[in-house]
Image 1 (cartoon, rainbow, N blue to C red):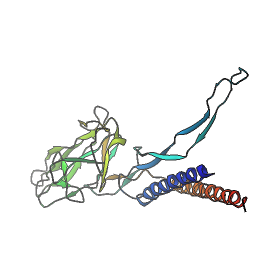
Image 2: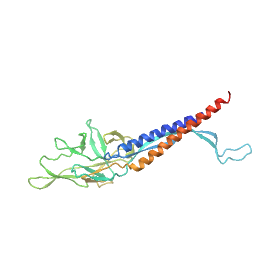
Image 3: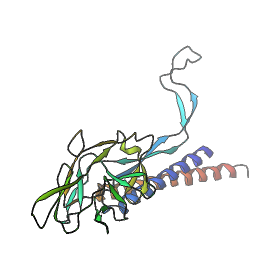
Image 4: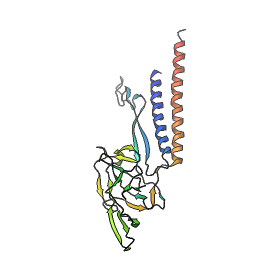
Length: 262
């Protein structure tokens, strides 16, 4: 019964983490480029009272063993990098990635971060930047007075000279891909950074070497399904209640046992 108390406790802790993860998903349901997170669990060590296949005193073999589990523990919180829906915005600085890849962002300390959020703006020097002012890499600078910004599906960026009405290329947007994007480290502000688990980035132009295409005037929405997350929330709540009931029941049984000597 004492074991049941601890086992039930691990279940409550696990489901609390599950609820926290679901809450973060629901909070970011409208966050551009956000990717669904899923809590994953594993059972803990077992106490082997009798091994399966053990020989008995009558020289027979037991078809099953006796093992007592000790509960559950958080194993990982995995990001699911499935495609989010593309929402039309009408803003020429908005770009969505359809397929695999990340935009490269230059951080203030010179390091590179990555994002799926293509809600860019233009700074005082005409450079494309994130809402936080971080530079898109490679840098794209829009000449003063130019009109008709065009970002092609293959990442080629061009503008129109108002004097000559000629189109001129001003840069090329490239995408970074990772062998294990779930291994990227989240640092907030829709940004992730490389880790040993993610592998090194493979840089290529959109629509080449497996990289996705770019869609101007669109943003990629979160891939969170509100209905699925609400369902998961109810399941997590019920699991939490059942583990709580386990602790209550074990406590009642211990109370009955302790009263036997009176």
